[in-house]
Image 1 (tube, rainbow, N blue to C red):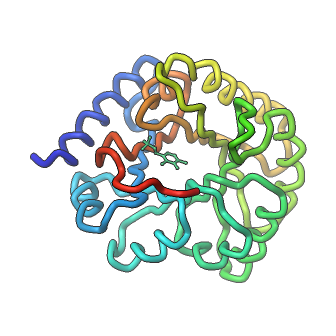
Image 2: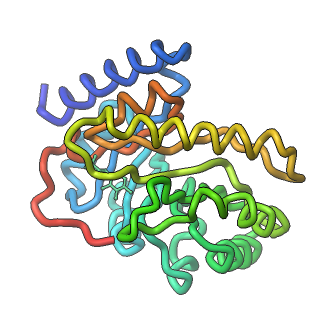
Length: 234
Ligand SMILES: *Cc1c(COP(=O)(O)O)cnc(C)c1O
């Protein structure tokens, strides 16, 4: 078996045990294979395992890989999205994980309406209030949701975060717990048109802890393909 396939098998096993620890099963967690900077042949190798959710952080890369990868892929935009690029990917992606402003949501709503579709989005939360990170501050989340919930052709499915880069994944447990609590709190407010059940959190270094704390989607790149040859810019 190739390294890529072996890595995916290992990660699947680990997701499964972490899911069981949180009283769930493997099926409750979507494994998003983060394919940024990776070329099409290697991505195809990954997809041969049956994993067909791919995460990219740049609009351009989704556009370049969309045709060559063919049907059956669910593309997830996980990186910062500029308003003027929404039109290129609106009907290509399964979900946009990185919505961090009402203005961006308005553009997504407008473009989705033009295509006659409903866009599924997550709100990116800057859970540790890191200055270097995109995302909504936890305390502003409800206010932003109230605005976005009024827009047509867009559904807020849940929350996403990029946790701090840490040596020991346990350090991020507190942030994953906080994300779960935020989701529960907002659902309990019974806002019209808002019921969130997706928590996109956990990367190569910390996905097991994230799943233990309730992640329903993990985004793993390095763990699948090895270290990226060049850094992906946001
Ligand atoms: C690159 C990236 C990942 C995957 O990171 P790895 O550490 O390589 O698993 C996950 N989420 C986002 C938003 C990313 O940009």
